[in-house]
Every structure is written in C-alpha cells, then in structure tokens.
Amino acid sequence: MLKIFRPFLDTFVSIKLTVVLIAFSIILVFAATLDQVNLGIWGIQQKWFRTFFVYQDFRGILVPIFPGGYTIGGLLLINLIAAHIRRFKLELKKLGLLLTHFGLIILLVGELLSGIWQEDFYLRLDQGETKNYAESHLHNELAIIDTTDANFDQVVAIPEALLARRGSIQHPKLPFLVTTKAYYPNASLFMREPGGPPSLATTGIGLRAVAAPRPITYKQNENNLPAAYIEFTGSETPPGIFLVSTALGSSQSFQYGGRTWSISLRPQRLYKPFSLTLLKFSHDRYAGTEIPKNFSSRLRLNTTDDQNGREVLVYMNNPLRHAGLTFYQAGFENNDRTTVLQVVRNPSWLLPYVACSLISLGLLGQFGIHLFAFIAKRRRTTAAFAT
Image (tube, rainbow, N blue to C red):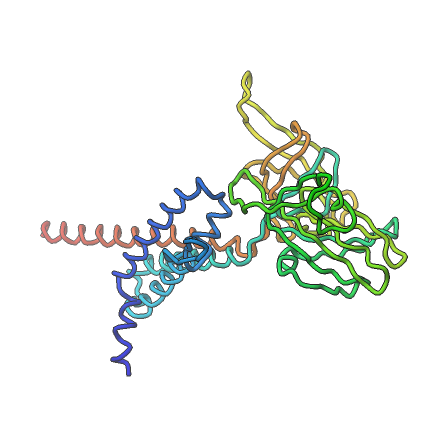
C-alpha cells in the first residue's frame, strides 16, 4: 500500500514542486499588478489572492484560468511541512533553517487567517464630533429603526446578502414581513418622467424616482451604490413598497402598528462600547509649499470606566490599538475639517510580526553557525600548518 502512494507523497516533498509554486507565485503577483489598472486593491485581493482559482468571464461563463492565492499558498504550506517531516532532522547545525521555515509556515497561515478574519471599516469624524461606530465601505445593510421613543432607537439591521436573495424575512422584533421585490448591487437613480413606465415602489421616494441597474465597479476611486425595492406587509394595512438606496443619503419614515418607523440602506456599521471624539485634525505642509508633510488626528477616547477619557494622537505609522481594533490615519475631507480613520479588526495581526522575527532570527542563526564553523575550521588548518 505504501508503494502505491509513494509517488504521490514524493510529489509533495519534491523541491521541483517548490520551484514550480514559487514561479506560479511570481506570475500571480505580476498578473495581479497589471490587472490593478482595471480593479481596485479590494477587487484584486478577491479575484487573485483570496480565492482558490482565478476565473475569467467567457460569454457569461466563469472559467478557471489560473490557480489562486489560496491554492498556491496551501500547496506551499503542505510542501514545507512534508519536506520537514521527510528530510529535516533536529540538529544544531540546522536550527537556523528550521526557524526560517517555521517562520514561513506561520507567515502563510497568518495570511490565510487574515483573509478569513480581517474586517475593514472607516470612521469619519468632524471636529468636535463623537461616534461609537465605524462604517464598512464594502458591505451595506437595511436599517429598520423604531423611532417612537425620542430617547431610544430600536434598530434591526438586515445584511445586504440577505436582500440579494430576494426572499422574505420575518424578524421577531418587527411586526411586519420584509420582502425584497428587486435588488441591484449597483444602480443609478433617476427622477420619474410624466407618462413614463410605472415604478415598483408604491410609496415613499420611489413615487418620484426609479432605480436603473448598472455594472458593478471594482475601481479604487469608484463606489457601488446598491438599491432595492422593499415591501413591508403585515396584518394591518401594508405600508407598501419602498425604494431604498445608499445614494439617497437619508431615511424614509412610515407609521405601522401605532409606532413610527424609518428605513434606509446604509453602509454596514460596527458598534463598540466606547467612542472617539475628534479634538483637532492637523494637515501639516512643508514650509512655502503645498506638499503634505504629516496628517494627524488628536482624539479623545471615551470609555465606560473612564469618565474623562484620555487623549491620543493618531498619525501616519502610529495607529491607535484598542479593544481588538486598530485605527489608522487614512485621509481627510471637507477642507481639513473631517478626518478619515481606517478601522481594522484582525485577530491574527501579530502573526506576520512573529513570522518575520523567526525568519530573521533563523537566517542570522544559520549564518552565524556557518561563520563559526568556518572560523573554527580555519583555525584548525592554521594550527596544523604551524606544527
């Protein structure tokens, strides 16, 4: 039985497989770099690196044309582990190589976990503004809010992925059924013309505007503006079908069951039990020029166990880390009156640092071992000639 599987096992420990996978990695990075002209960085990651195969659309049919990052990285990981089990022995003279390869394994695992766990949000703050949530720039949600109580809002958020399925949703906190009549991942809004075709909407802003689908964009400087027609039905008189879109920028209200409700399609929010207040945003320039020198945000971190909060300064390469989140200075808007912070949640953020440390330590150790061995051999040779 072992003889049958030996060729298969030998393939995974072969140095030839390592060379082929490294060559595929080079091609993958090169092709993805060229494709970045058409796609933004997030589109590149999803199409080329965080996938098992790279697909190409041929007349509406997706055909795999090249192994993706997960396939190449996974095979490299198996190849490294298998080679260690088969060939390497725990010896002092090979300790540096073991540490280096172990660092490479952690680096590959860290990239896999980052692709699975990492989430990115953005926090926009005007000077003096306080927020306890950040917003996603990739995902959206349908927010249905009970605004009857002036002091408290009851929010039900339905992810965009559920809307795209065009089904019905009955949430236990909602007295009505939510049904998606139509969903467009990217759409333009137009004012209805007199005598034009009827709209799917029966109430709200959809009586005056219509949504027209358009191709999805992945470019860095463009955003998708999803839209949907949502119907609310229940035991009472149904409020009707609403047009919702992230392009509207405001919510729509209606009455149902003796309560006041508002709905909007908005970026997905990440709420936290602490808040940030922008005290001052600084956009420093080199003297006598308009060339940017530094961007920084002076913030007050407000937590439940600290009534006064504490001041923190976030600038380039100096993020704020708190409660499992990392806040980076990403940009600014509104003539330097609004700061934009990138908020990253990545439980595996330490793994690349650990991996690089092990690789550096392993390379230095292996170099040191060979250096000391060479010096010792040189001394023995010199002593032999001296005698």
